[in-house]
Amino acid sequence: MSSSCCSTEGTCSTGTAGTTTATEAVTTAYAVSGMTCGHCKATLTKVIGELDGVSGVEVDLDTGLVTVTSATEPDDAAIAEVVDEAGYELTGRA
Image (cartoon, rainbow, N blue to C red):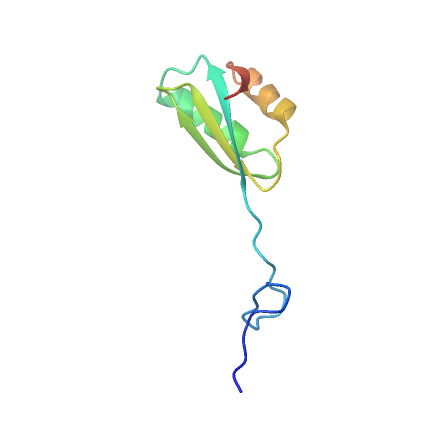
C-alpha cells in the first residue's frame, strides 16, 4: 500500500508539523513620475519596501513603473503617501 502526501482536499503535506500552504503573491504596477536616477530607484525601493505586507519592489526608471509584490491587495493610499513623502508622484495603477 502506498501513501501519498496529498490530501483529498488537494493540499500537500511533507509531514512537517506547522507547515502552511503558500499563498499567491499579489503584484501591482504603479505609474510614478519624477524618477530619474539610481538614487530615486533606491529611495522608492526602501520606502515602499518598509510598508506592511510588501515583499518586493521593482523600479523601472525607463518606463516610470514601480511594481509592488505583496501578500495581499496593496493599500494604494499608503503607497501613494510614502511615494509623495519621498518627493515623487504616484499617478495611478499602470
